[in-house]
Amino acid sequence: MILVTGATGMVGGHLIWHLLQTNERIAALTRSHANTADLRTVFEFYTNTPDQYLSRVNWVKGDVLDFNSLERAFEGMEYIYHCAAIVNLGKNYNDMILTNAKGTENVVNAALCNKVKKLCFVSSIAAVSDDISHGPIDENTPIEPDKPVSTYSESKMLAEKEIEKGIQKGLNAVIVNPGVILGISKKMTGSGELFKLAKKGLPFYTFGKTAYVDVRDVCKAMIFLMNSNINGERFIIAGENCYHRDILRWMAEGYHTYRPFIGFGKLLIPVAGILEIIGKIAGFTPLIDRSSARISISLKEYSVGKFLSRFDFTFTPIRKCILEICEFDRKRKKKTVLYP
Image (cartoon, rainbow, N blue to C red):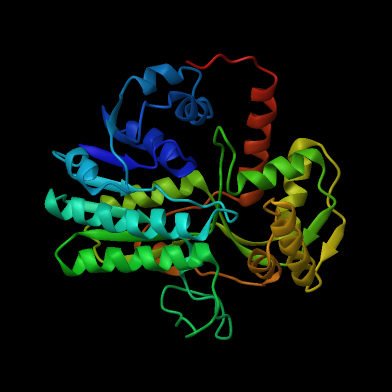
């Protein structure tokens, strides 16, 4: 049996859909009652009969922060896809480190206790070096020591160390480092926030560039790696290196709103700093802080050469991905759907 953590998140939900195409049943970890509404939204992206597939999901109670619950949940499981994580950059530092790092430590130890055959961990390009001095970044680009990183980057780096510890203890595991993942989910958090802003007509963009990838490609890549004999390696998964300006303009095209036309460069960092201060005084979390501002104006390119050297794989063009997401989102907003 296969089990997926983070099953109601974007990656976990799409992954379950793809796994159900070749497996009769899939186990999904849930902290309380199964939230089928989140998963139904993802399934509706693929089919008009989502309940037919939802009925094939076995909901297993467990929490990545509760080792004992994981140990019970992993009983009889052969393959684990660990997708659970906090990705919201505005979240509390301690919450993100706890969930992403300590949670992964618990997953690893529970997998070892239950002699799981193989584990796939969803990390991020945020955990990879951002040193572009030698060209496009790959899995072997050395990390610059003592360089400040975002809380999210730190949490994913710590999580990868837990996977490495597990591998040293005999765990068969692989790590994927996706670029910015684009896809449909019910809550549209993470990269979904960009779609929400673009839908309203966002006038601003930043001059940065990074790797983007369709969530469907991430899921397919994970399944390829899990079905292979590859162990103890990490792989950057990226469709294209795109300017943020183009991403937002394609979203505007998909929603039929006006394209962003005001660009921000280095000036964004002090502006974000002022917003942070005001947020602390007024008691709100600003949309962007100094850390995310630096990321949004940086120019980075990532290489997916390692993955493509092992698998015959064609990535979805990012513009096509975005237009399909916008079309689905526009159509679902016109429907009245009742969720149990």
